[in-house]
Image 1 (tube, helix red, strand yellow):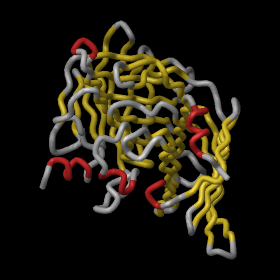
Image 2 (image 1 turned 135 degrees about the vertical axis):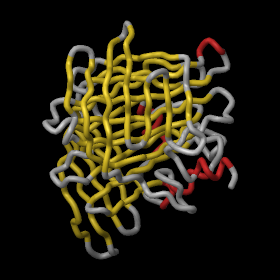
Image 3 (image 1 turned 180 degrees about the vertical axis):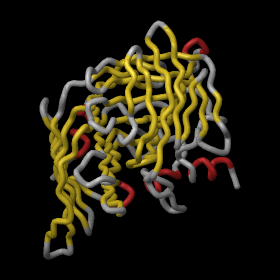
Length: 332
């Protein structure tokens, strides 16, 4: 079994063992406590630059309630070739666990969390994860994977002088890897609906040449009652509306069998570092206080049957340089 095939079929694993710079890879752990008043994102990763001085590993910490973001830079990085098992300095990351030991001028983060009842995006030969068959294409500028739509959290973290008990809370894990984040994109995620286990993740960004671009590449997944409803370029989904204002994002999508209507209310956030081809730069404004209304319909060519309607809380959202993206959509 080739290493490329193995990595494609295991999107959670580290993909950079034989990659030449520029290359980045990062995992995103969303952590919400049971009361939903403590919201954090922990983002470990690595950036490989053509300039040796810019190559480094990192752990970003975002306080989703205050918008405070810290960037902890490290020199060490180790990743298992046959599993999702990453070590950055004294910090360890996997699908089921994170162990943090950060103590520097930017702040202090210590503790261990474990995750159970994971809900990964299914991986098949024809569609190895959240990008569908696009997941087989080499040299994509930015690849995207959903490691767990929703899961339970056990454990606590001490962040600076505050110990936060996340036991009974809900989590979400995804990742990105490639050469750079898209020049323009929208990303939205929530797994805090009234029905536990329901989770929505949405991303759309500019896909450049040589992969047929530039064009708007998108992947949207709604997990509800154990069923995954998928919308993306990979299954010929269409976007009938995508409107962005200072206060909201309105997004309507459909396939031959389903329609999804999303209304998301924007909120203030914090500024994260994001990868470009030459460096990690402060370019990602992320909130964890957005709100989402989502409605899913079944279509049979005659009827429009409502399958789900819900309000998502504690939503994470990033809206970056959207005007060039919207111009590419050419919605009729």
